[in-house]
Length: 353
Image (tube, rainbow, N blue to C red; front, side, top):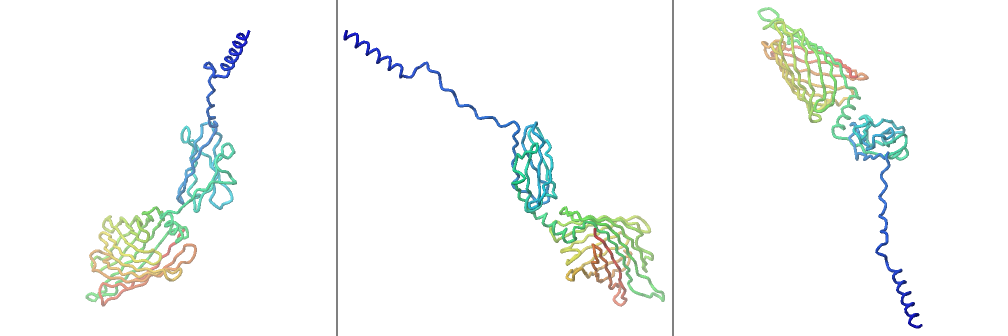
């Protein structure tokens, strides 16, 4: 009887141990669930770090084709109202809006993006700010615009009379004189190094002992104003002129340091085929408010290339009237011989708009 009880207890202990041990046939633990996929309408946008003043600013967003209407709302920093522009599809995933150059001004541009009217990047209450800096060329353009009050166009006209004095040869008075008229239109591009374009016409007719009636009835010309470096300019002109005998070519070049309508020094040369060549040096100053002045020394054989070389020294005074209107006077001395003095006089007018 005791043996039966011992066997029963041993069998009970063995079964308890097997039940507590891990089973080789137990089911494996389930793997962790994968991360949820991004929402189907998710919009991604990386804001530009900074921008240059006066240049277009691109805002690019990545979104699926079926995304609701994407709109960029922007304003200059400190402004009250936002302007809006819809993003357009660039490819399957990218959408773009372009903030116009006139809205990209220092110190920055504030904006936010919406999809279907709901904010997806920043918000109206907390817009993102992209810093706007001023490049050297932009700063230069601002200075040039301020100098002329933003007026890019100019219409200009000048008329002058030159008389080299009264001479008598064998009892006969010799004429040595001419008049000149110039009119032109200029437009300031400020697309450096190209600053300005000018087109115009000229008329120059006179009388000389050597050639009689001289000059040209009309000449048309085109001029480029170039300035790679601020304050140092080159004006280059091509001329086509109709002389009494034929059609001829000419040109003019001027190198200038400073501001043309203010303080500057300039030197140049003008060549007009069959009519003459002129070299000049000019010093101008703008120290008197609204009254720029200049003094010029000129060596020339106008109005005929067969004439003796003469010298002109003249003084220009211009007065700024109002709203870009300027009126000027010229007076000076002209002579081909030291003992025969003559007179130079003229007037000029221009208006900027």
